[in-house]
Image (cartoon, rainbow, N blue to C red):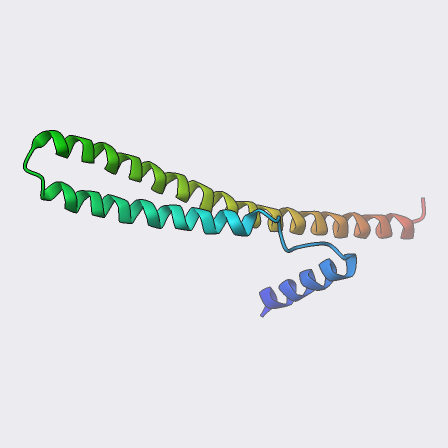
Length: 118
C-alpha cells in the first residue's frame, strides 16, 4: 500500500504546483502514426510474400523481395516512432518526479538548517 500512498502524494504535489503532466502535443499523433506504419509494414510484407509465391519468373520475385525489404523498413520506422513517443512520455514523468523529490529534499534540508543554532 506504500506505493499507492506515494503515487497519490505525487499527484497531489503536482496538482498543488499546477504543473502540466499531459505531455507534449506530438506524443499522441506520433504513437498513432508509428502504430499505423508498423501495421502497414507487416501487412505489406505478408502480401508481398504471398504474391511472390505465385510468380513463375525469378526476375519478378527479385523485385518483390526489394518491395518486402521496403516494407520491413517501414515497420522499423514505425516502431522507432512509437517507442520514441512512449519513452519521451515516461522520461518526462520520471524527470518531473525527480524534480519534485529533489525540491522536497531541499526543503527538508533548509528547514533542518533553519532550526539548528549556529
